[in-house]
Length: 296
Image 1 (cartoon, rainbow, N blue to C red):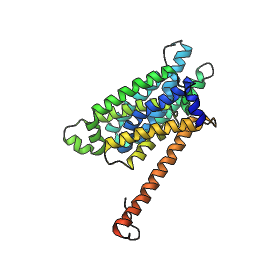
Image 2: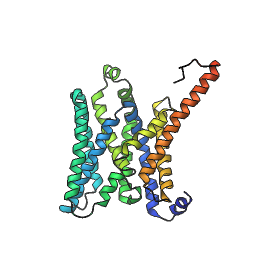
Image 3: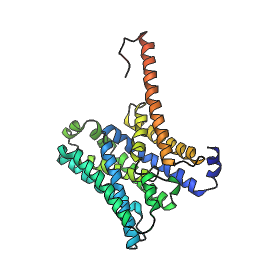
Image 4: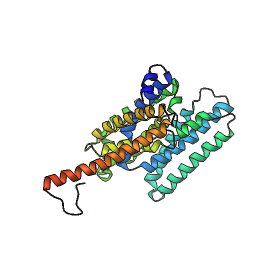
């Protein structure tokens, strides 16, 4: 930890790593809250794994067809948005087949990515870093792209805060009030897709769902209002990414995996702490607690 703080002022790659973690935490806190409250973790997971297909196609075009300006993250954005729209459309039109389509898109996206990576000449170490996460490899170009996506996500989330709130908590009532629920649901999935692209630069595709959901789940144990939950989730994500980066730096551990382990420990501590505090408060308020009863 001390070595990390000392080197932070000397090495640009460490500053980029910390910056991208803090930038991604803003969108993660907002969209992760919607994902947790709307219970669309499985959909978010499918979108995340489709990103590998976009990364593979973009790198294949860049290498084989010499499209030097085509950054792999551009392919990731396109693949994620296509997956979000397709899953959203199927969820609305054919709910009975939703699980099957989610699983199929999950598998096909990964398979397409693997095929294009295999057919791309050279050693694709940077694509593998997107799979497993390597925050220390973030470039200035990556940082600017993440910042741009962050601005879009935050602006849209705040602009449509109330329709998203209605869609997440009381879909039927919102529909009766004339809110175009389907349209906002697909838009929410598109925001989730963009957030996934942000987070794969931090923890990789494999671990992205944990970082999208665990900070929001931690925030949910202490929040009663949605916007409170968003702010707390963003702050929690920032603390976890910075802490994971600092803890992994000295022992030379994978920063993404360290961040997720830290998030898991924090989540368990939050849940157990709330149960313990709730039980003690209930006992103190009533002078005792009948067997089998506890404060939820």
